[in-house]
Every structure is written in structure tokens, then in C-alpha cells.
Length: 405
Image (cartoon, rainbow, N blue to C red; front, top):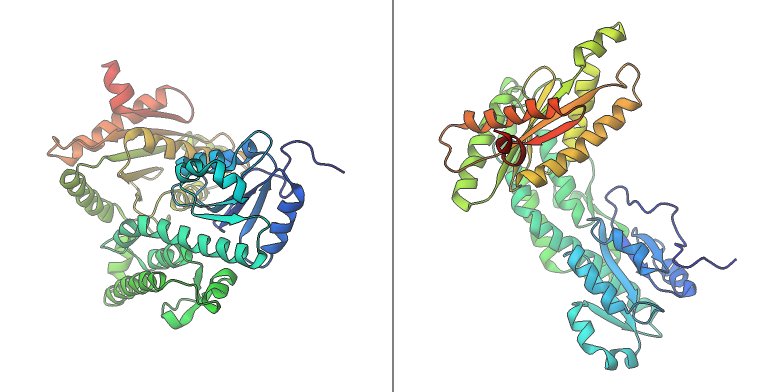
């Protein structure tokens, strides 16, 4: 049965879930899509295929997309135009063009504009194409790791706990396609994914990846050594036992550090105060003292949704604070909209808490402020304004509250 125009021949949903690296294949010839999909069997790359480039465009910006392969000549689009758009949306993904010599002679400038990393001539050599895709996946993940390395290393500073060190390893080493076995962090204990092993066996795994891994493991080892020298009470003082978020004392330390960094480098710093509304009413209706259930669930959503450089704490019995280094208020608000959406989804499917809502107030740190209290007070003012706007409201002090005064 022929496919309808633009139909995808694998996967039923356009959403990419999880962190497994993804390969996007774009070609109007279904036979080529299926052939390349078979070629990548066992690579541990999630293969997503499209006959219509417009159906693939929404996925270009997804961080799990590491390689984009496009045919050059399609009925309504040129592959160079498609890859040029991908370049704007995803600076780390590698772009590969399938083309004939004639196409390249006619549009050499387009290849340059799209910053194509590899051009594979048709008819392609299957072994060469597979090797190019695997190498491109490693290169893309390496560049993404280099971009995140400063924030990953900062996560091992004063605030790091043992679970955070393990998260660090998962995010850092995992980007390169390696997984630590158990709790060990010795380089000998690394188990490479299938595509990492294949590149190593072919002698194509660059030494730079090894150097980055050594840096990550060294930093993690130092952090674990420091933690092992602390008393149990000192470790517990860092983490809130109910939520596994940082304690308010550690949050204040991180806030002071990030304020100094924002002043030194002239980068934005935003804070979000989150309150759970109708908490007492819903807990009373439930007929049981189960108020810890939503607090734990919301804290888990926060931990999984924020970046490694963001800092979160439980500031009150039912409120949270999140620090967003490097983010302007609008971007912090976008992050919080995603988080409050996840919270609303959890509440909608949890008995007794279906009507739970949140309010979020956001403020941006100003270098003119000498007291941290004024920074937090403005976010608290925005929090009150967000609550007045209705359920799940989000307000930014600089953009909304201040203009009303």
C-alpha cells in the first residue's frame, strides 16, 4: 500500500522521548529510507524517517537529535535548504547530504550555506554511510558535551551530593555513549554502547573523547573523596530529606555564588518562587495526612526538569525556589510553564489532588542590588500577582508587575 505524501514510515508519534540519540532520515524515496533504516540496525540510534521535510522540521531543535541525513533532490525541496534550516535549529546535530555529482556541480554554494558536514554520493557505499553516521553521532554528542562542560563541572562544586555526582556521570559520560557499571567511576568500568564499540573497533574513536571522559571522571572522583570525608550530619545538612532537593542553607550559598558570577560576567540570573495552591483544602478533603505525597512528587518533577546548573530548594512547607543562572526572566518563565504543565498532569491523574494548582513568581537579579532580600522580595511580589491571575498563573516582576505600579 503506497504511503500518503509526507507520511512517516516508522513511529506513530512525532514526539521524541528519552535521551537516546536520534537519527533523522529525509528522502522522498521510501525504498531508500527503509534501506538506510535496515543499515543502522543494531546501532542504538533511534531512526526516524520522513518522506516530507516539513514533517521533520519540528524535530530539528530536539537535543536528542544528533544526525540529520537528507536527500538533495526532492519534489518540493532541496536537501541543502532543509539542512540549512536544521543548522539554525540545532547547532550540534551533524548534517549529511545524499547527492549525485550533478547536483553538487549545480548547487555547490548551497552545500556551503548549509554547512554540510559530509556529502555521500549516490549510489552510496553502505559501509561508508554507516561509518559516517556513527562518527557524526559521536562528534555531535562531543560538541554538546563541550558546550555543557562548564555547567557540569559547576554541579560538582560545593553543592554536590553523592546522588548528584552520579547524575553528573550519567549526563556527562552518557553523552559520549558510555555507561558506568554500578557505582564505579573507574575508566575500566565503562561499558560502551554498540555504536561507541563499533567506532573503537574501527579505530575511529577520536582521542579527544577519551580526554574529556578522563576530566569528568577525575572531577567526579574528587567530589566523592570530599563527600567521603564529611560526617553523615554534614551530608544530610545539604539535602532536604523529604524532597531530596538542596537545603535552604545550601541554596543561599549557591545564590550568593551565582549573584557574584552574574555581576562578574554580565550574565542574567532569574529566580522563580513556586507555591502549591489549595494544598490545605485538598489535604483535608482527602481524609488522611498524605500531604507529603504531592510535595515529593513535585520535587521529583523539579529535579528531573531543571538543568544541571539550576538550583532548587523547598523554601516552605509547600513552596519551592528555583534559581536559573544565565536565563532571562522570559526563558525562566518558559521553563516553569513546562514544569507546571507536568505538575498539572500529575495532579490530574492522582486521587485527591486533581484540583491542585500552582502559582509562580519570577524576578531577575539586578547588579544594582546590594541585598539578596530585595531580589527575592520582587519574585514574591510577582508570586502574589500570579495567584490573582488564576490557577497555574505565572508572573514576571519586570515585565508585568512593575508595569502595573
